[in-house]
Image (cartoon, rainbow, N blue to C red; front, side, top):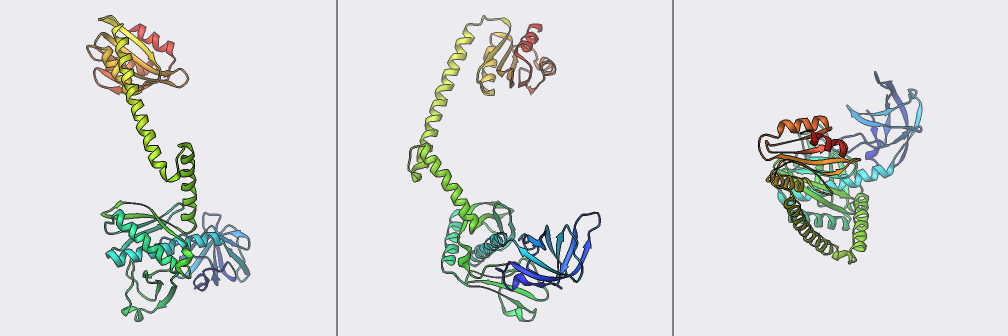
Length: 384
């Protein structure tokens, strides 16, 4: 059994220990290292393991196997030797801020709504918390405010191990039935929970909690959370974006949304005008074509698939076969290929086969892309 120093002092960084065993993993370049004591927290309960090194050798993973903490290293260490370990405290602090933040949010939601946390994961970018009940945007806003109030109050956080007999009278949260000794973590007046993770000494050390998003999940609610330095970094990035948009739109930071809405309205107006002009232009071009023309191949600039389809469909009222394309020889062409009568599908397959194309559609009109040159496309139409 390994002495778990991370429970004695979660802010400790360095430690010394004796190697109990070190065994090579079959078909691997790694070794399983067991010490008599360690500061390395193993992966568990939704919290990733600690990072760091032992005698300067990186610890790649840490697991708990029957109360033995297994350190995975790439270099063997002699049984009985003394070693020095050092954890990455920045990573440890991040894990503790996220995990303690989870306790605060989950405890407050359980107290107010009676919902249980049924899933918890600390990812590299954000933390997810899954609850077995539906929470509205307003509910989560109120919970976030209460959570940060608990941080400002700097409420104490304690952990204590109880025997199975002692725990009977204590009300606590737990995701599963526990037998044997139980470690109970109390987070101020926010939460009392069975937990094996590392935590901060008080809520104030969390710094800040920000709920950045939520979504429906398996009949309940998945909440996305940031705490501590992650929340601060998120604010810095988003504040930088707002200031950049503020400068680009010549508006005050708090007026940026209105300024962008106005730009989008103006853009939509321009698109409507552009579509009207395109329709008129297409109409003028079609008027110049003689009714009953056998075939036509037209190259246009900057036409969307929707515009190509409309142009081709309108052309087929006067032309037997119409091919309309937009693009260039370097990047390829989008196309619409239609016919006034009969079935265009066989010709469409031939078009795609001979001109390195992809596409499909109906009996009267197919659309897709071609990667051949303009002169090759024209030659194909000449052969029809």
